[in-house]
Length: 418
Image (tube, rainbow, N blue to C red; front, side):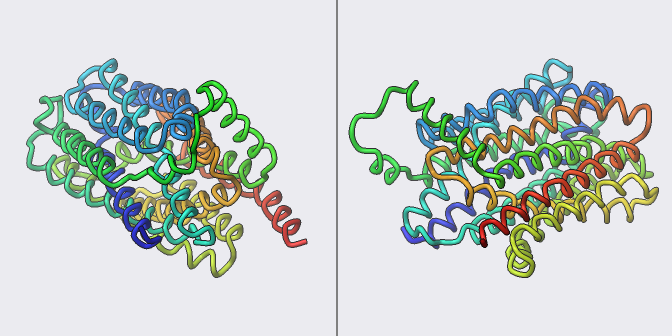
């Protein structure tokens, strides 16, 4: 296989990986709200998602390093399909908790494994091949796929009939989750056909070491690379802040948009369209990310993208008009698209192949840790102080984090040049 063929395969798989989430994303919060859950209860439901992700994120990465990325990706796709089937029919707190717990388990298995497979395979084909091209195009394709999924979901919900008061899996918001489950099955099939790890097995001849020793070696390597690399620590700390800030955005944007819209009959299409537009904005940002890197450098581009996101999140609650709210929301996701490839290039450049998936999962764990704190706090804070206060607080926290990590990043760059 050529490097170009590998990159195209990776881009396709990354797009298909998040299509199931794109189909359900516009209605993740409004679905339980329409079925009788309060905003505080919904926050607890998604805190369960974050808690399960935290518990499984690093072990799932170590599992991918141990038994192979393909097996772990297949398991994650299967769990995603089951979780969305439950979400489609759920009408109680317990049912929604079960759904998001399985969704978190599936996402933990998927997280990092595909990127680790791509980076290792690319390095085997061409050790000097740049990572930014494939990672940025993969992020852009992911955004486009999620946008398409969100648009389709909005249309399906509009055609399905009344969305309020439950109605079962085949009416209202449930049809979007059913479509997401079907897309997850499609991803499982694609992984089975396209992810090839024969080269990985060939690089490990002889009798394998005992499982316990191999796991211990992987974690030891990951710990050493975390302690030795400033870039890895910066990425992890920033991941916490990003998880907190954008969890606050995700938990509150649907209720906020519902308040701003005068006609409830437009909710399905409006939510789907805005979710789709946010994914396209993220895709545009990801596509522009290599240019930003070439223009100002990896570290400066990363900090500029983070700064744009922090400002947009902080101002998100200020407007009382749909147009201004939508503009800030889309700019926030444009900044996320800019940030994502640079974020993971910093991480991948700093780590070796032995524990790559483990460290990528460790970064995702940090992000989920921030999300857990936000999900537990946001509902209560929004109820007492309003969404504008929560978003201003989240944006300020992200700004402080960006300023704090700038110093070690630039100090490391000067040391490397010296």
